[in-house]
Image (tube, rainbow, N blue to C red; front, side, top):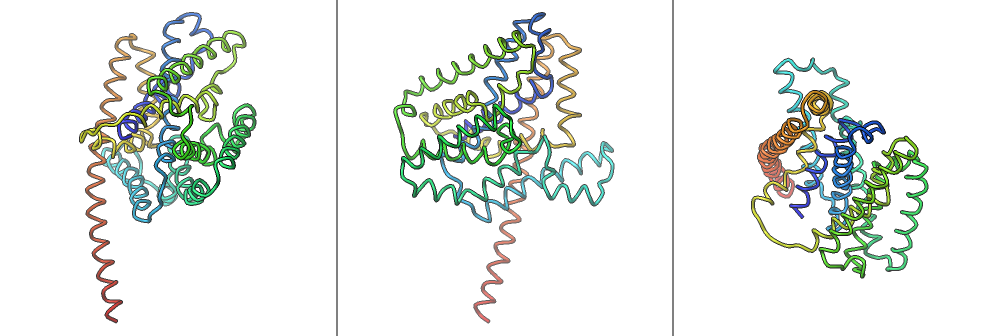
Length: 344
């Protein structure tokens, strides 16, 4: 599963480097460069499963809320936000923050680039309720709830694009995916117990179906195709689910992968930080795509993504060391206070 975390985070980098930075291929793009448009659609279709994978992992193992783990998560988010600001301020790349900016940081600067943090915190808070339901509801009730949820989400969160579901960006969509993974783990079926190679074939079949639909819809209507890439799209959910199932059926141990996977979330926090995301990530990739040859663009962008990924992992190890040191100090202080209380 640590390998899956790494792959999912690489997918997030690709999603942001494709449609987020460059926009979806237009009708003119498809007519002028059908092959390039195909590969761009293919890359987006393969990688759009990224966010759903993280929630499915959480649901499969179950979130067990603990103050220490939640505190570490909050510390990681704030550590990256503060560190990025201080480094950029030291180099004169940003102005001094106001009190309002610091308050926004404490509320995780909710917005387009860091939306996942607050949605995941809501899921984290509600996870005990979801766990209780999953563990005590009988199979038929659980199944009916899941089916009802995804039908409602299909009509009101995908077809109608109600803000309540926010195209899969909302905590309510996370809860549905969380329960889907829980159900699949608790109640294996013929649909989830296929050979792992069938799982990957189903994933690839759905990916190519999305690409085909994107081409056909754009050519037939000339309208936008972003709805095909909603996290709440049934095809995206199915692709995510079977890609995830593939990884549940492979097992190996590798220290390097575990070491990297433990810090994979840092990649999101670094490149998606509001101070960096548009100016230094999206704009750079767009400029290379516009001004460089295709080969140079691919080489520059690939190297850029690898550098971001590597830097994020290394920087998170500093964060991890800092957290462990701080936690040990706080734990010792708590034990001393508890001992004094008992003696009193």
